[in-house]
Image 1: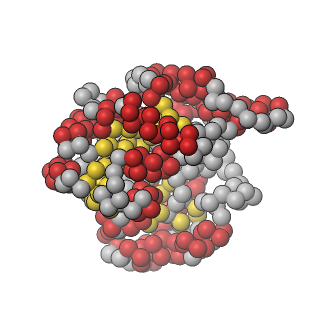
Image 2: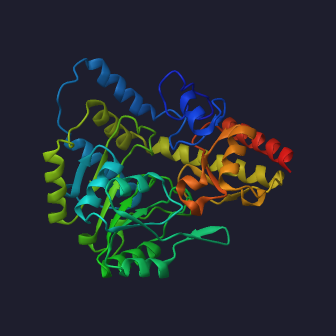
Length: 392
């Protein structure tokens, strides 16, 4: 696979490469776009070919979701992750955030608390607030360069009967932790004991770097199925977020029925002809492409690691165990959160997602999307080194 070739995305209204977006969010339309969590790499050839074939048919009328698509998904998770998914537990929905929003409404009341583990994906906060729930923080702890869950604090937050839900990010965006079975089992035990419903966002599940392995939350032994649901999508894995939907996996029959009835009432469980073609092709034929991509991403991480080692610029990498995101620590530069964001965008000419977007616990950090040609990462690092030299 050739992931080195640059691809011009500016001809289409992509968020990451939009001059208007770069100007509005970063004050610099010429900054290297590395903030949005999609990849500047072509989807698997099998997906592109399937879309060509579907488009060539010329008729795009109403369709149902083919059983072969769900079979392909189930086979993927069983073969790749050892997770045997009961297809009766699957409920389609337009997006993972859409599924999370529905699950929040169905498993809590207005004013209840929803526990987050910041620094964490910023749109979780948006969904909680729009649902008129209260954000309750269970911050991660940075210990010896690696993030850990604070289980004592989680126990205290879960014990409060007003806190009804935990949104789990597995693997974790932005810090790149791939949670272990033991860690997830502890989460499950605490939450089940206090009747806290766990919504596990596992959109980055296919991105785990050896020796780390993605552990599906619902496959953890002893998970109380009445207190959990998982959200999946092939969007990140195969870089097809713009054309695919998502799935909620809800093992508990009564919970699943409620979700299904809501989806039917508001007609959000329809399919899309191109989505169906892309998903089935990706899961049936995308394994080799993903293996090559993971190796390439490992090379991008190694580039960052070696560059920072060779150029002592008071910036460090939080070693990622998964995702295609690099969490960089800029605290040694001594800049406050807003000043750091301005420095990166204006002086280093890089559009990184500022750490404070992920909660105040992310202040002093920034997220770099490394699902891109290696030359882009190299250019961003060189820009950063030059800017830091001028700063100090």
